[in-house]
Length: 115
View 1 (cartoon, helix red, strand yellow):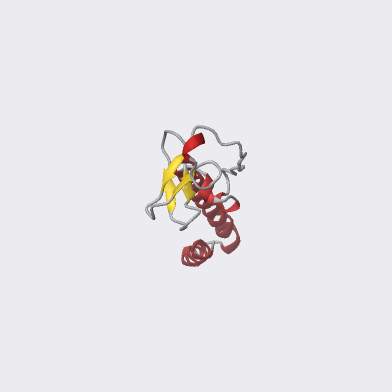
View 2 (cartoon, rainbow, N blue to C red):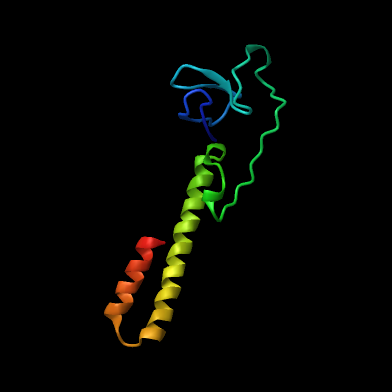
């Protein structure tokens, strides 16, 4: 899981273990709530922090709260969906433009750079 350091904003990744995070800036904080680290109560945090992850559109979520694996899955889904959309557009353009492959390629290329 990835979160920003609440003190300097650098991304920190937690792969396993307790909620104690130490940033490269030297500050220690709770992974769950982002508060300053409390040595006395490091196995529990009573702050409920949850985020709904929309797998189909990663731009709708705060990426500071999702794992790198989930982020990669979202980006891969978006890439594949984009390719499918371009293929469908190309089929429609062939129908509309008829036998003009240069114009179809130009339009698809233009669409892929702006989408």
